[in-house]
Each structure stands twice: as structure tokens, then as C-alpha cells.
Amino acid sequence: MTPMPVRRLVNPRLGPYFAIFASACVAIIVLSLIAEQLGATPAHVRLLILTAPLALIVAIGLATRTGQASEFFAAGRRVPAVYGGLTFAISAFGGTGLLAITGAFFLIGFDALCLAIGGLAGFVVMGVLLAPFLRKFGAYTIPSYLGARFESPALRVVSAGLICVPVAMFLVAELKMAAFAGGFLTGASTYTNLVLAGVAVTTTILAGGYRAVAWSGVAKAILVIVALLIPVTIIGIWLTNLPLPQLSQGPLLRSFSRIEAAQLPIVIAPGLAFDMPGDALTALGKRYAAPFGAIGPHGFVTVMLTMMMGIAVAPWLLPRIASAPGVYQARKSLGWATLVFGLVMLTMASAAIFMRAILVTDIATGQIPEWIRTLASLGLAEIVTGTGGAEAGRVNLSGILLSRDAVLIALPMAGGLTPVFAALVATGAVAACLCGAASAAMAFAATLSEDLWHGARKEPPSDKVRITASRAALVAALAGSVVVAMAVEADPLALLLWSLALTGSTLFPVLVLSIWWKRINGYGAMAGIVTGFSVALLAIISGALNILKIDPALAGMFGIPASLVATLATSLMTPTPSRHILEFVRDIRVPGGEILYDREMRLLRLKTRKRSAG
Image (cartoon, rainbow, N blue to C red; front, side):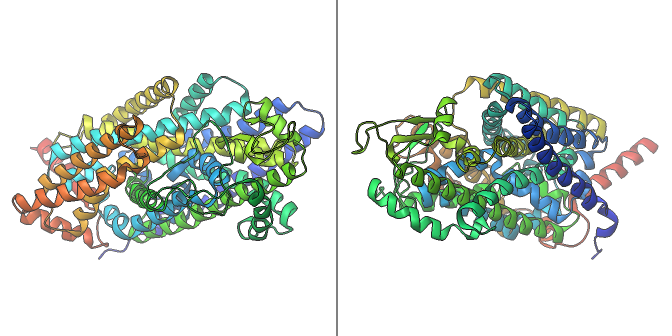
């Protein structure tokens, strides 16, 4: 087997480059604090802390312009493991996960762990069952792999059309959440912020494609981590005297649980209940540490498994494994992604516990704190007096309604920090949204151009034609998503959960069986993909219309088994795969050697040259 030339492929100056970017982010924070002390208006400080880092990120994206297909669609297969892991971790749930899941932790406590556990398990499953083998094949999109694996252009085109639906859902969710966080910083309307978010994503990745997604994504991930860790660590030191918020919230949780016990009831949810907080103002309905009060035990397990399978085959994540220098680096990328994702989730849970502790302590004094009044003036909170047995003119925990998505941004306000830190958290949320939106938009564009536009061709066109088509598809996808985000009133977290349920139902059984079961054929793959998508989509629509008495996020419990049964039954009832396909599967299972997709492209170029010479 030919060893991969890792040292030659990886740029040794990446570390200093991104260290300079991280230092610049810290310098911008310090300058913002100085400007605030010198009397700069809060609006100017917010714009400084938003525009300065994003300008650097856009500059990184513009500097990655390329005219080579391997660079545009796979970042030249030169993204080291640690940098790939950073972008994987932040792109998985994006800014929607950052803000909405933190708010869910705050409002329903440990019940929201199903989302965090599912995401972590998804990276593990991807790294063990799928990533090394899809990296060996090296396709730029999942439909490209399926079309080659089963020698079926029709399967490639059909799967591309179905995949576009969950990718579009995730993209719309990220744009909506970017508009929410951007509105806190700019004060502009939702429509204006949606357009600005679409323009920012387009400007950043249009020139370089996945190369821009990779390198600007690393910068966005650094900004997200800095924006999350600094305020939460400061609040943690203030509350617990320890600089590790991820490990110090236990005693704090025990202390405010006693106060919660006097004001909040113990709630027992039915088995398949899934009452995830929406984007409307919501009151605390259960104690933080009481399990299965908003989400039933069966619903908890179902959503956890759905998240796991959806993340493992997410079209905005899995194809990017082709950008790793080799199979070993692909596995390491997912190891780093699991570590970073776990750190971010633990920090978000800590932020929620700190916010609960501050709220419970302030309300216990009988006074309405000033930070809640500030949030109420922004439309992010509401105060209801005389509720839940409280005396007239007084308020208890159930009388405070907060916006789920504003909890993380409000934490620095509640902790008494200067407005710079709230603006910093909002900027980090915008960066996370742009990171997730860039990954989804590029996956959308590559699927449209490579699989729907050129999918039926026996030979791919020239690099220039492919890149031009993908850029046109990118602009169209982002413009359409912005219009949809303006027109459709939908909860971003619900869109994220529906997207992962659709993705897992459509792709997970077929992709896993395509590697680990040689008997599967093109008929079975087509049946599995179409059946899983159709059943999951029908379950989502029925749940949203209250025809089916379950939450649409649980659609995977119908779609994934249906896809698996359809794949197995159809494959067994139709002819066995050809010997050529079986040898192809054997090659995929061997991690070393030449990338199969690159070998196929090289042989096609040789044939073209021979025809031209003849």
C-alpha cells in the first residue's frame, strides 16, 4: 500500500496563521472594552465587536479562491485533523444548536441531554461505520458515492433531489438564527439581517468553495469558542470560585434545587412526550434536575437515536471527510470533533445552570432584577406578577417568561458583566450560524450542480464548467433560502430536528448497508431511500398538523425502520450485485491505496487525451 504523503500535503504555517487570528479576536475584545470605558455608545461597541472579526473571516474566504475542482469540492484533501474537527463540531448543530439548546437546558433541564448525547454518539458512529470508507472512495457528495457504489445514475439523481430537502431545512434554520442574533447587535429588522447573513455566507465561500468553508470555518470555530468560554468562565469564577465551569456546576445545582422545590412542581411526562421549548417566551415549567418532565423516557431515547443517525450521515458534514489528507486523519478529525463538541455542550449546560442559579437567587429576594427588566424592554422576557400562589405585586419563578434563544446572550447581563460580553456572545452565535450555513449551502450547491445537473452524464465536464455551475447553484440556493426564511414562520430548532430526522431516515440504513452488507443492490438502495424519506416526511407533516399524536421530531422512529425493511426486502427479492460491484466494495474496505474517485477521474482524463490525440 502506498503511504499518504501527509507532511507534504499539510501547510506547516496553519498554526501561526490561526494563532494570529485568535490573538486578533482577543485584541478586538480588549479594544471594545476600552472604547466602552472611553464613552463609546453601546451601538458602536456592538458593531465593532461584530464587524471586525467577521471582516477577517470574509478576507480568509476571499483569499481561498481556486479554479481546481479538487480544491473547490474537497479543499485539496489537505485539511489536518484538528482543524477539520473544529469545523465539524461547530457545523453539526451550528448557531441554532448553540443558542436553542442552551435555552432548552435552561428551561427543561436535563431532559435536553438527548440532543447533546445524540450529537456525540453521531460523531462516534460516523467515525466507526462510515467516514474511513467514504474517505477511501473520496466522492465530493453522498449521491455521487451512491451512484458509483450501485452503478446507478438514476439513484444518484433521485437521492440528490431528496437530500436537498433536509439540507434546505438546516440552511433556513441557520439563517433565521443568524438574523435573531444579528438583530440583537445591529438593531435592524429581521428581513435586513436575513439578507446580510445570506450575503456574508455567499461572499465568504463563493470564491473558494469547500476550501473557503474549511479555512474560514476554522476561524469561525475559534471565534465561537472564544465568545462562549470567556463570559461563561468569568461567571463561573464569580459563582463557584473555580475557572472550570464545565466541572464546577454540581454544588451550585444542589443549592438552587432547594429553592426550586418550593416553587416548581415535579412533572412526569408520558413515554413518547417531547415538549421541547419553542421560540416563544416560555416560563420555567419543571425543576432542572428532575428527569423526564418535558420529554418522556421513550421520546428521550427516540430523539437521541434519531440525532445520532442524522448527524452520522448529515450531508453538510459527511462529504467533508473527503478533505482529510488520509483515512487516518479522517478518523482523527472525528475524534477532535467529538472532543470539541463535548466541550461546547458541557459549557452550554454550565451556562444554563449558571443562568438558573442567578434567576432563582434573584427571584428568591422578592425583587425583580434589573437585567430581567432590560430583557423585557427588548421583547426577550415578560414579567407576570401574582402567579403560582405569589402575592399580588410579587413574582415567582413561573412568572418569569424568557426567550429560549436569548438565554446564552442574557447570561453576561445577569452576571453583571459589561455589555461588551453580551455582544461577544451574540457575535459568537452569528459566527456559529455562518459556519453551519456555509457548510449547508456548499453541500446544497454541490448536490445541485454535481448530481442533479451533471449526475446523468457518463463523464464529468471540465473543472471550469463544474465550478461555474456550482457557484451559480450556490447563489441560487442561498437566495432561495433567504426568501423562504422570510416567508415561513418556523422555529429554527424544530427545523434542525426535522432535518436530522429526515436525513437519518433517508440515508442511514442505506449508507451503512452499502459498506457492511454486500448483498444490497441498487434496487434495494432506491427503495430504502425513497421509503425512508417518504415515511419520515409524512410523519413530520402529520405531527405538525396534529393528525399523528406525536411530535414531528420523532419522525425517525417511523422512517428509519421503514427504510431498513424496504432496503433489505427489495435487495433480497432482486438479483444479486455483479462481481464488479463486489470488488468495488472490497476496495472501499481497504483503507490504504489510491483514492477510488481520484483514480476514476485520472483514468477518464487519460481516455479523453487518447481520444483527442486520435
